[in-house]
Image (cartoon, rainbow, N blue to C red):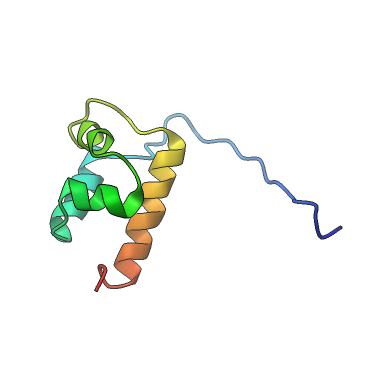
Length: 82
């Protein structure tokens, strides 16, 4: 395959699978003593969006959920930002 060509993998997500659970975000913030404003600056996601997601008033788009999930995993692997 040529160097400039990209390979793509297509997959489907089971609609019954819960990708994002609102308690996961609030639990993560509380465990690491992060305010919403701090998490917003670290992830680039607005404070309003984070608040709506935590309160269960909105659900994040898959791309934002994925961004948060990757951030939370990396943050914990690196010792909580220490």
